[in-house]
Image 1 (cartoon, rainbow, N blue to C red):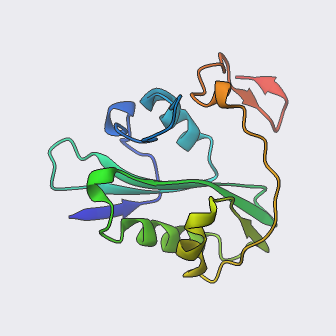
Image 2 (cartoon, rainbow, N blue to C red; image 1 turned 180 degrees about the vertical axis):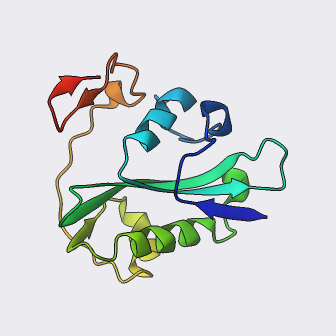
Length: 151
């Protein structure tokens, strides 16, 4: 049975194994945990039937807290795909972000039909991808962008 939660209580890097399949330079689980901790909103799908209670899917958002939010990541482990977990994660995240004016995400063209199910509309956009930084390992220290100081 998969349960959902919107907090990171008791989530450790060892519960975040197997994500970023197909990425040439994926983040380590420790970096993945930092990504989630730095997000303004998270929804996790957890397999409660396994003794280690692994995270089997997640979605994250970053926001200014007032007007806009961006959904950078949605992933479901391969063994759990096709069970509606991605739909549930997306629905729950969009519910959390209901009060924002703009909720944006970028996705590959083949994923547009998935997001159209949630009344999202295709829009143009621009991106930069520095694949050499994809793992997040280049970040020796984390910067708090609100204060411009290293933490």
